[in-house]
Length: 426
Image (cartoon, rainbow, N blue to C red; front, top):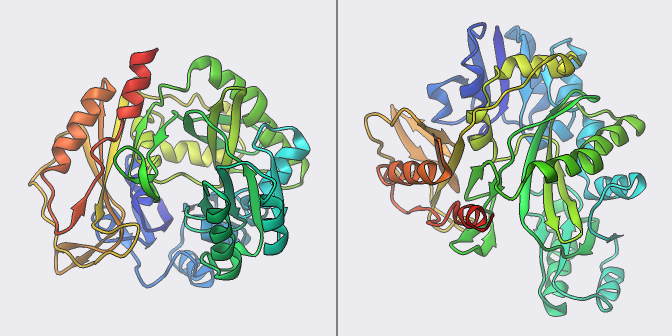
Protein backbone atom coordinates (compact mmCIF):
# COMPACT_ATOMS: atom_id res chain seq x y z
CA UNK A 1 0.00 0.00 0.00
CA UNK A 2 1.02 3.58 -0.69
CA UNK A 3 0.14 5.83 2.25
CA UNK A 4 0.07 9.61 2.50
CA UNK A 5 0.42 11.49 5.81
CA UNK A 6 -0.23 15.22 5.67
CA UNK A 7 1.71 17.30 8.19
CA UNK A 8 5.27 17.71 9.33
CA UNK A 9 5.65 17.60 13.11
CA UNK A 10 6.17 15.23 16.01
CA UNK A 11 2.58 14.02 15.85
CA UNK A 12 2.99 13.04 12.21
CA UNK A 13 6.28 11.29 12.97
CA UNK A 14 4.54 9.23 15.67
CA UNK A 15 1.73 8.31 13.27
CA UNK A 16 4.20 7.34 10.53
CA UNK A 17 6.29 5.16 12.84
CA UNK A 18 3.16 3.33 13.97
CA UNK A 19 1.83 2.89 10.42
CA UNK A 20 5.16 1.39 9.33
CA UNK A 21 4.54 -1.57 11.64
CA UNK A 22 1.90 -2.90 9.23
CA UNK A 23 3.49 -5.32 6.70
CA UNK A 24 1.01 -4.26 3.99
CA UNK A 25 2.60 -0.78 3.90
CA UNK A 26 5.16 -0.35 1.15
CA UNK A 27 5.65 3.42 0.88
CA UNK A 28 4.68 6.32 3.13
CA UNK A 29 4.81 9.84 1.74
CA UNK A 30 4.88 12.79 4.16
CA UNK A 31 3.72 16.21 2.95
CA UNK A 32 5.77 18.19 3.87
CA UNK A 33 7.43 16.01 6.54
CA UNK A 34 10.72 17.10 8.14
CA UNK A 35 14.35 16.04 8.43
CA UNK A 36 13.80 13.32 11.00
CA UNK A 37 10.66 12.04 9.31
CA UNK A 38 12.74 11.56 6.15
CA UNK A 39 14.41 8.62 7.91
CA UNK A 40 11.04 6.83 8.07
CA UNK A 41 9.10 8.13 5.05
CA UNK A 42 9.52 9.86 1.70
CA UNK A 43 9.17 13.58 2.42
CA UNK A 44 7.88 16.10 -0.11
CA UNK A 45 8.93 19.41 1.48
CA UNK A 46 7.78 21.54 -1.45
CA UNK A 47 4.12 20.69 -0.73
CA UNK A 48 2.86 22.31 2.47
CA UNK A 49 0.00 20.97 4.57
CA UNK A 50 -2.28 23.84 3.43
CA UNK A 51 -1.61 23.34 -0.27
CA UNK A 52 -4.79 21.39 -0.93
CA UNK A 53 -4.70 21.44 -4.80
CA UNK A 54 -1.07 20.24 -4.79
CA UNK A 55 -1.86 17.55 -2.20
CA UNK A 56 -4.77 16.28 -4.26
CA UNK A 57 -2.71 16.21 -7.45
CA UNK A 58 0.12 14.36 -5.67
CA UNK A 59 -2.31 11.78 -4.26
CA UNK A 60 -3.73 11.19 -7.72
CA UNK A 61 -0.40 10.85 -9.55
CA UNK A 62 1.20 8.66 -6.86
CA UNK A 63 -1.75 6.29 -6.61
CA UNK A 64 -2.28 6.75 -2.88
CA UNK A 65 -4.26 3.90 -1.31
CA UNK A 66 -4.92 5.59 2.04
CA UNK A 67 -4.36 9.10 3.38
CA UNK A 68 -4.08 10.40 6.94
CA UNK A 69 -4.80 14.12 7.28
CA UNK A 70 -3.17 14.80 10.62
CA UNK A 71 -3.09 18.61 10.89
CA UNK A 72 -5.95 20.96 11.78
CA UNK A 73 -5.54 23.48 8.93
CA UNK A 74 -5.89 21.03 6.01
CA UNK A 75 -8.82 19.37 7.78
CA UNK A 76 -10.60 22.71 8.15
CA UNK A 77 -9.75 23.58 4.54
CA UNK A 78 -11.48 20.44 3.27
CA UNK A 79 -8.55 18.20 2.38
CA UNK A 80 -10.51 15.05 3.26
CA UNK A 81 -13.46 16.26 1.16
CA UNK A 82 -11.23 16.71 -1.88
CA UNK A 83 -9.46 13.36 -1.46
CA UNK A 84 -12.80 11.59 -1.07
CA UNK A 85 -13.86 13.11 -4.40
CA UNK A 86 -11.03 11.05 -5.91
CA UNK A 87 -12.28 7.97 -4.00
CA UNK A 88 -9.13 7.92 -1.89
CA UNK A 89 -9.89 6.52 1.58
CA UNK A 90 -8.90 8.92 4.38
CA UNK A 91 -8.54 9.08 8.12
CA UNK A 92 -9.82 12.43 9.34
CA UNK A 93 -13.06 14.45 9.44
CA UNK A 94 -14.48 16.40 6.52
CA UNK A 95 -14.56 20.19 6.71
CA UNK A 96 -18.06 20.35 8.21
CA UNK A 97 -17.08 18.06 11.07
CA UNK A 98 -13.70 19.80 11.52
CA UNK A 99 -15.60 22.91 12.63
CA UNK A 100 -15.67 21.33 16.08
CA UNK A 101 -12.10 22.64 16.41
CA UNK A 102 -11.93 25.26 13.68
CA UNK A 103 -14.66 27.33 15.35
CA UNK A 104 -14.81 27.72 19.14
CA UNK A 105 -18.21 29.35 18.67
CA UNK A 106 -19.53 26.30 16.82
CA UNK A 107 -18.27 23.89 19.48
CA UNK A 108 -19.53 25.95 22.44
CA UNK A 109 -22.96 26.34 20.84
CA UNK A 110 -23.04 22.60 20.13
CA UNK A 111 -22.34 21.79 23.78
CA UNK A 112 -24.95 24.25 24.99
CA UNK A 113 -27.60 22.91 22.61
CA UNK A 114 -27.03 19.26 23.54
CA UNK A 115 -26.36 19.65 27.27
CA UNK A 116 -22.69 18.65 27.17
CA UNK A 117 -20.98 20.00 30.31
CA UNK A 118 -18.66 22.94 29.65
CA UNK A 119 -17.81 26.38 31.05
CA UNK A 120 -20.41 29.19 30.90
CA UNK A 121 -19.62 31.51 27.99
CA UNK A 122 -20.58 34.45 25.78
CA UNK A 123 -19.62 35.18 22.16
CA UNK A 124 -18.53 38.62 20.87
CA UNK A 125 -17.58 40.13 17.52
CA UNK A 126 -17.36 43.71 18.85
CA UNK A 127 -14.44 44.55 21.16
CA UNK A 128 -16.41 47.31 22.91
CA UNK A 129 -19.23 44.93 23.80
CA UNK A 130 -16.69 42.40 25.05
CA UNK A 131 -15.03 44.98 27.30
CA UNK A 132 -18.39 46.11 28.63
CA UNK A 133 -19.28 42.49 29.50
CA UNK A 134 -15.94 41.96 31.23
CA UNK A 135 -16.53 44.86 33.62
CA UNK A 136 -19.11 42.77 35.48
CA UNK A 137 -17.10 39.50 35.51
CA UNK A 138 -14.82 37.95 38.09
CA UNK A 139 -11.22 37.02 37.31
CA UNK A 140 -9.30 35.07 36.18
CA UNK A 141 -11.33 34.56 33.02
CA UNK A 142 -10.70 32.77 29.72
CA UNK A 143 -10.66 34.51 26.32
CA UNK A 144 -10.44 32.40 23.16
CA UNK A 145 -10.04 33.35 19.53
CA UNK A 146 -12.81 31.67 17.54
CA UNK A 147 -10.62 30.10 14.84
CA UNK A 148 -7.42 28.08 14.59
CA UNK A 149 -4.35 29.70 16.16
CA UNK A 150 -1.69 26.98 16.36
CA UNK A 151 -2.89 26.02 19.83
CA UNK A 152 -2.05 29.47 21.19
CA UNK A 153 -5.35 31.33 20.78
CA UNK A 154 -6.34 31.11 24.44
CA UNK A 155 -5.52 33.84 26.97
CA UNK A 156 -6.28 33.85 30.70
CA UNK A 157 -6.33 37.43 32.03
CA UNK A 158 -5.96 37.74 35.80
CA UNK A 159 -7.63 41.16 35.99
CA UNK A 160 -9.56 43.70 33.92
CA UNK A 161 -6.41 45.49 32.69
CA UNK A 162 -5.02 42.21 31.32
CA UNK A 163 -8.41 41.46 29.77
CA UNK A 164 -8.36 44.83 27.98
CA UNK A 165 -4.93 44.01 26.59
CA UNK A 166 -6.10 40.53 25.52
CA UNK A 167 -9.13 41.93 23.67
CA UNK A 168 -6.98 44.55 21.94
CA UNK A 169 -4.38 41.94 20.97
CA UNK A 170 -6.85 39.42 19.57
CA UNK A 171 -9.57 41.59 18.02
CA UNK A 172 -7.79 44.81 17.03
CA UNK A 173 -4.11 43.91 16.52
CA UNK A 174 -5.13 40.55 14.99
CA UNK A 175 -2.38 38.63 16.80
CA UNK A 176 -4.03 35.43 15.57
CA UNK A 177 -5.16 36.86 12.24
CA UNK A 178 -8.76 36.37 11.12
CA UNK A 179 -9.19 33.76 13.86
CA UNK A 180 -9.74 36.67 16.24
CA UNK A 181 -12.68 38.26 14.42
CA UNK A 182 -14.92 36.60 17.00
CA UNK A 183 -14.04 35.61 20.52
CA UNK A 184 -15.46 33.41 23.24
CA UNK A 185 -15.27 34.63 26.83
CA UNK A 186 -15.85 31.87 29.34
CA UNK A 187 -15.63 31.21 33.05
CA UNK A 188 -12.35 29.98 34.49
CA UNK A 189 -12.63 26.36 35.58
CA UNK A 190 -10.44 24.65 38.15
CA UNK A 191 -9.32 21.04 38.58
CA UNK A 192 -6.93 18.54 36.99
CA UNK A 193 -6.74 18.61 33.20
CA UNK A 194 -7.00 15.43 31.14
CA UNK A 195 -6.54 14.83 27.43
CA UNK A 196 -8.49 11.93 25.92
CA UNK A 197 -8.02 11.17 22.23
CA UNK A 198 -10.57 8.86 20.67
CA UNK A 199 -11.15 6.87 17.51
CA UNK A 200 -14.64 7.33 16.12
CA UNK A 201 -16.38 6.36 12.89
CA UNK A 202 -19.32 8.67 13.53
CA UNK A 203 -21.31 6.14 15.57
CA UNK A 204 -18.90 4.06 17.63
CA UNK A 205 -16.33 5.78 19.81
CA UNK A 206 -13.22 4.14 21.28
CA UNK A 207 -11.30 6.33 23.74
CA UNK A 208 -7.52 5.98 23.73
CA UNK A 209 -5.29 5.94 26.80
CA UNK A 210 -5.63 9.23 28.72
CA UNK A 211 -2.73 11.66 28.97
CA UNK A 212 -1.52 14.76 30.83
CA UNK A 213 -0.01 17.63 28.84
CA UNK A 214 2.35 20.35 30.13
CA UNK A 215 1.54 23.55 28.23
CA UNK A 216 3.55 26.21 30.04
CA UNK A 217 7.12 26.92 28.97
CA UNK A 218 8.70 26.84 32.43
CA UNK A 219 9.09 24.44 35.33
CA UNK A 220 6.25 24.63 37.84
CA UNK A 221 3.79 25.50 35.06
CA UNK A 222 4.91 29.10 34.72
CA UNK A 223 5.63 31.22 31.66
CA UNK A 224 3.81 31.52 28.34
CA UNK A 225 1.64 28.82 26.79
CA UNK A 226 3.33 26.58 24.23
CA UNK A 227 2.22 23.83 21.91
CA UNK A 228 3.20 21.43 24.72
CA UNK A 229 6.52 20.81 26.51
CA UNK A 230 5.91 17.19 27.37
CA UNK A 231 3.27 14.68 28.28
CA UNK A 232 2.66 11.42 30.16
CA UNK A 233 0.17 8.57 29.80
CA UNK A 234 -1.99 7.30 31.33
CA UNK A 235 -3.21 10.27 33.39
CA UNK A 236 -3.61 9.09 37.02
CA UNK A 237 -6.42 11.60 37.64
CA UNK A 238 -8.57 9.84 35.04
CA UNK A 239 -10.04 6.93 37.00
CA UNK A 240 -12.33 4.22 35.56
CA UNK A 241 -15.23 5.87 37.36
CA UNK A 242 -14.51 9.24 35.74
CA UNK A 243 -14.02 7.53 32.38
CA UNK A 244 -17.52 6.07 32.64
CA UNK A 245 -19.01 9.48 33.50
CA UNK A 246 -17.22 11.03 30.51
CA UNK A 247 -18.48 8.32 28.19
CA UNK A 248 -22.09 8.88 29.28
CA UNK A 249 -22.13 12.69 29.59
CA UNK A 250 -19.51 13.88 27.07
CA UNK A 251 -18.14 11.35 24.56
CA UNK A 252 -21.32 9.65 23.30
CA UNK A 253 -23.42 12.84 23.49
CA UNK A 254 -20.83 14.65 21.35
CA UNK A 255 -20.84 11.94 18.67
CA UNK A 256 -24.65 11.93 18.64
CA UNK A 257 -24.78 15.73 18.53
CA UNK A 258 -22.51 15.88 15.51
CA UNK A 259 -24.62 13.28 13.73
CA UNK A 260 -27.81 15.17 14.61
CA UNK A 261 -26.28 18.38 13.20
CA UNK A 262 -25.65 16.65 9.87
CA UNK A 263 -21.87 16.56 10.24
CA UNK A 264 -20.95 13.14 11.67
CA UNK A 265 -17.37 13.03 12.90
CA UNK A 266 -14.99 10.36 11.58
CA UNK A 267 -11.35 10.30 12.63
CA UNK A 268 -9.61 11.22 15.87
CA UNK A 269 -11.68 13.41 18.17
CA UNK A 270 -9.66 14.95 21.00
CA UNK A 271 -11.38 15.84 24.25
CA UNK A 272 -9.61 18.41 26.43
CA UNK A 273 -11.26 17.91 29.81
CA UNK A 274 -11.15 19.51 33.24
CA UNK A 275 -12.17 17.45 36.25
CA UNK A 276 -13.96 20.20 38.18
CA UNK A 277 -15.46 19.88 41.69
CA UNK A 278 -18.87 19.51 39.99
CA UNK A 279 -17.74 16.86 37.48
CA UNK A 280 -15.84 16.55 34.18
CA UNK A 281 -16.31 19.40 31.71
CA UNK A 282 -15.06 20.04 28.17
CA UNK A 283 -12.41 22.74 27.83
CA UNK A 284 -11.92 22.18 24.12
CA UNK A 285 -12.33 19.78 21.23
CA UNK A 286 -9.65 19.10 18.64
CA UNK A 287 -10.48 17.45 15.31
CA UNK A 288 -7.21 15.47 15.16
CA UNK A 289 -4.51 13.78 17.20
CA UNK A 290 -2.96 16.07 19.83
CA UNK A 291 0.69 17.04 19.83
CA UNK A 292 2.57 15.88 21.92
CA UNK A 293 -0.16 13.57 23.33
CA UNK A 294 0.13 11.33 20.26
CA UNK A 295 3.77 10.68 21.11
CA UNK A 296 2.79 8.90 24.35
CA UNK A 297 -0.56 7.41 23.33
CA UNK A 298 0.35 5.62 20.08
CA UNK A 299 3.38 3.80 21.56
CA UNK A 300 0.92 2.17 23.99
CA UNK A 301 -1.40 0.96 21.19
CA UNK A 302 -1.19 -2.82 20.72
CA UNK A 303 -3.73 -3.05 17.88
CA UNK A 304 -2.41 -2.21 14.41
CA UNK A 305 -3.01 1.50 13.71
CA UNK A 306 -3.74 1.17 9.98
CA UNK A 307 -6.34 -1.51 10.74
CA UNK A 308 -8.05 0.87 13.19
CA UNK A 309 -7.95 3.76 10.73
CA UNK A 310 -9.44 1.64 7.95
CA UNK A 311 -12.22 0.52 10.31
CA UNK A 312 -12.97 4.17 11.07
CA UNK A 313 -13.13 5.07 7.38
CA UNK A 314 -15.34 2.05 6.59
CA UNK A 315 -17.58 2.66 9.65
CA UNK A 316 -16.75 -0.76 11.07
CA UNK A 317 -15.03 0.32 14.29
CA UNK A 318 -17.56 -1.69 16.33
CA UNK A 319 -16.03 -4.86 14.89
CA UNK A 320 -12.59 -4.18 16.41
CA UNK A 321 -11.26 -4.92 19.89
CA UNK A 322 -8.73 -2.09 20.26
CA UNK A 323 -6.12 -3.09 22.83
CA UNK A 324 -3.45 -1.20 24.78
CA UNK A 325 -0.23 -2.03 26.60
CA UNK A 326 -0.40 -2.15 30.38
CA UNK A 327 2.48 0.32 30.72
CA UNK A 328 3.31 4.01 31.05
CA UNK A 329 4.81 6.46 28.58
CA UNK A 330 6.56 9.80 29.03
CA UNK A 331 7.59 12.36 26.41
CA UNK A 332 10.06 15.17 27.07
CA UNK A 333 10.21 17.94 24.47
CA UNK A 334 13.58 19.38 23.50
CA UNK A 335 12.98 22.94 22.32
CA UNK A 336 14.99 25.79 20.87
CA UNK A 337 16.08 28.37 23.43
CA UNK A 338 13.61 31.27 23.45
CA UNK A 339 10.57 29.21 22.39
CA UNK A 340 7.66 30.09 22.25
CA UNK A 341 9.10 33.56 21.60
CA UNK A 342 12.01 34.32 19.30
CA UNK A 343 14.41 31.45 18.68
CA UNK A 344 17.17 30.63 16.21
CA UNK A 345 17.12 27.78 13.70
CA UNK A 346 19.86 25.86 11.94
CA UNK A 347 21.69 24.46 14.98
CA UNK A 348 23.52 21.19 14.29
CA UNK A 349 22.27 18.25 16.36
CA UNK A 350 24.22 15.28 17.66
CA UNK A 351 22.74 11.96 18.76
CA UNK A 352 24.01 8.76 20.38
CA UNK A 353 24.77 5.91 17.96
CA UNK A 354 21.74 3.97 19.20
CA UNK A 355 18.78 4.57 21.50
CA UNK A 356 17.62 2.15 24.21
CA UNK A 357 14.96 -0.27 22.98
CA UNK A 358 12.16 1.46 24.93
CA UNK A 359 13.02 4.94 23.59
CA UNK A 360 11.71 6.67 20.47
CA UNK A 361 12.99 10.03 19.23
CA UNK A 362 10.22 11.89 17.39
CA UNK A 363 11.20 14.85 15.20
CA UNK A 364 9.00 17.93 15.38
CA UNK A 365 11.20 20.67 13.95
CA UNK A 366 14.29 19.39 12.15
CA UNK A 367 15.77 19.52 8.67
CA UNK A 368 18.31 17.35 6.90
CA UNK A 369 21.20 18.99 5.03
CA UNK A 370 23.82 16.73 3.43
CA UNK A 371 23.09 13.93 5.85
CA UNK A 372 23.28 16.19 8.95
CA UNK A 373 20.24 17.04 11.07
CA UNK A 374 19.69 20.66 12.11
CA UNK A 375 17.06 22.40 14.24
CA UNK A 376 14.22 23.96 12.24
CA UNK A 377 11.53 24.90 14.73
CA UNK A 378 10.58 25.86 18.27
CA UNK A 379 9.80 22.36 19.42
CA UNK A 380 12.58 20.26 17.91
CA UNK A 381 12.39 16.71 19.31
CA UNK A 382 10.16 14.59 21.52
CA UNK A 383 11.93 11.89 23.52
CA UNK A 384 9.43 9.19 24.47
CA UNK A 385 10.04 6.27 26.82
CA UNK A 386 7.71 3.33 27.48
CA UNK A 387 8.21 1.45 30.75
CA UNK A 388 6.25 -0.58 33.31
CA UNK A 389 5.87 2.47 35.58
CA UNK A 390 5.71 6.22 35.04
CA UNK A 391 8.73 6.74 37.29
CA UNK A 392 10.84 4.47 35.08
CA UNK A 393 9.51 6.04 31.87
CA UNK A 394 10.43 9.53 33.09
CA UNK A 395 13.89 8.43 34.21
CA UNK A 396 14.58 6.80 30.84
CA UNK A 397 13.24 9.74 28.80
CA UNK A 398 15.33 12.27 30.70
CA UNK A 399 18.44 10.09 30.61
CA UNK A 400 18.20 9.87 26.83
CA UNK A 401 17.42 13.59 26.49
CA UNK A 402 20.78 14.32 28.13
CA UNK A 403 22.60 12.44 25.36
CA UNK A 404 21.24 14.66 22.57
CA UNK A 405 22.93 18.01 21.95
CA UNK A 406 22.35 21.24 20.03
CA UNK A 407 23.08 24.87 20.85
CA UNK A 408 20.31 26.44 22.91
CA UNK A 409 18.64 23.13 23.80
CA UNK A 410 15.90 23.73 26.35
CA UNK A 411 13.57 21.36 28.20
CA UNK A 412 11.38 21.43 31.24
CA UNK A 413 12.80 19.40 34.11
CA UNK A 414 9.51 18.60 35.83
CA UNK A 415 7.48 16.71 33.23
CA UNK A 416 5.31 14.12 35.00
CA UNK A 417 5.81 15.44 38.52
CA UNK A 418 2.14 16.45 38.87
CA UNK A 419 1.15 12.96 37.75
CA UNK A 420 3.49 11.28 40.25
CA UNK A 421 2.09 13.47 43.03
CA UNK A 422 -1.46 12.57 42.04
CA UNK A 423 -0.53 8.88 42.22
CA UNK A 424 0.91 9.34 45.73
CA UNK A 425 -2.30 11.04 46.88
CA UNK A 426 -4.53 8.21 45.71
